[in-house]
Image 1 (cartoon, rainbow, N blue to C red):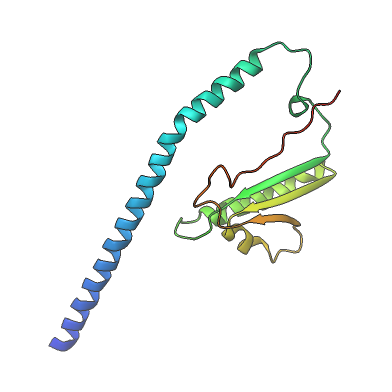
Image 2: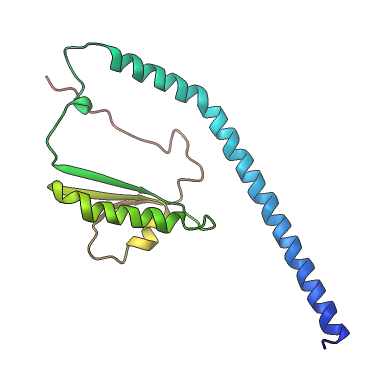
Length: 159
């Protein structure tokens, strides 16, 4: 049977673990609240974007935008979005496996494919694979995406 000193040590260890767990719960609750607030704040933007796109799609326009044209399959862009850190169960490995499966099964229809990775975990899981060609990796941007983080170019219209 354990002596009194060992029992007290075990009780102290359990109490320390409880404190750490409580602190982790508080931090995760704060992060979840911030994420929920960001989603709620983005709803008006999303609604307006859907309204604009629906309006554009409903118009009968003679000239079409280059992104809306039907084209032959030549190049494919595979965008893999994973987390920068763990603590999300099997999400990173499952999404990475699905991307690898897609590249292996679907890209034979294309002349060329480009694999871009958002998130550190996706890069960690795929960087040692010799059968995949990784074009670019974007790390440490998923935690704080702002309008300055996002950059894009508008294609010119063909005449």
